[in-house]
Length: 451
Image 1 (cartoon, rainbow, N blue to C red):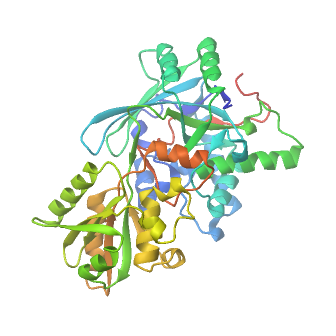
Image 2 (cartoon, rainbow, N blue to C red; image 1 turned 90 degrees about the horizontal axis):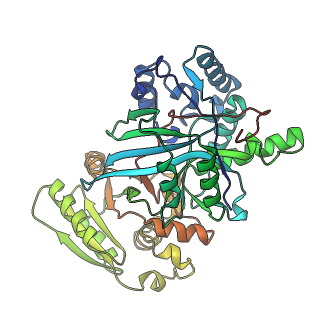
Image 3 (tube, rainbow, N blue to C red; image 1 turned 90 degrees about the vertical axis):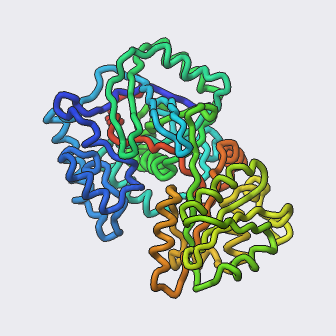
């Protein structure tokens, strides 16, 4: 079902920009104002100049904002900073990294164009909700620049590993480029131009669906861009650049695919640890973790959570009283709390148990209140979350309760997507992030995809 195609990537010219680390960036949606300033200091040709950060209010969405990006893009091409590859290619994209467990892994993916499909067609499947304001900004940027600066990260099923085996057999020994990100992960890109190899791989995708892992807003932006072209020109041909989106595709079974947990810091009135335990004991077996510094307590509860293979469990840390707990949900508690109307594939998710049972039912923090008052902060690094919890609670009438999470499984993402359901915000964190700037997709209205 999924249609993939090669494209002529627009890339940094290594003779003009020898250090890719100075110009590539994380995805735009994880770049805050401070990070944006730091990126601009590295190199005037940094990709943040083109892809722009999300830190903009509606009043700042002026035509000048997007025209400036377009003008720089054209200038950099005229100066030879960015050069377009001469042949259509599918790009192999490997990331070598260290997992938080200490293991060294390599995630293997490919970058190509994928035919756009409405979610209702079941070819491209989401698992996350879209926020319209973000799409509005991205749509204006795409419409002005006519270039896709970053890839949508998507997954595909391939138990035999046939796609990657075919592409690896067709690659050269030396990558086109390499770059290290701020975590020390090595990103490598190869070009596959052999028409026979590309045709074979396209055939392997013909019976597959793809599942968006990261980049739901970018995908929706491409759908809306296609609608704009149809409104202006009456139609979009199947092989039009506006009927495609640049994707980074990784097999669900890839040994290097990692989904990390996103921990929650919840602001609450000055509730004591004993009161919290009393409220949660209705639905959870609660065990206090004792003996050590806060860092030792955190490491211990995380280790205990890793040992629990089945069922829902959490860590809880109270920074004011320096007390830490392991929470293991009792069987049937979601149903007992009247939450059996939630589909089973969602009820099994830790993020749903936390939001619906722990916060909404036991702690009486409604979704609306959490959102309106910004009561929840999200952290991928548990140590960073711990430090922030302690800092927030100094001299405050409120206390930042840290809930430690286990990661959502790829199989759970697939099941939710197949059932056309939506996960809560920040349910998945696919690590490492795909870099923006290794390869761009320039969209020329008079070109035919694949040629």
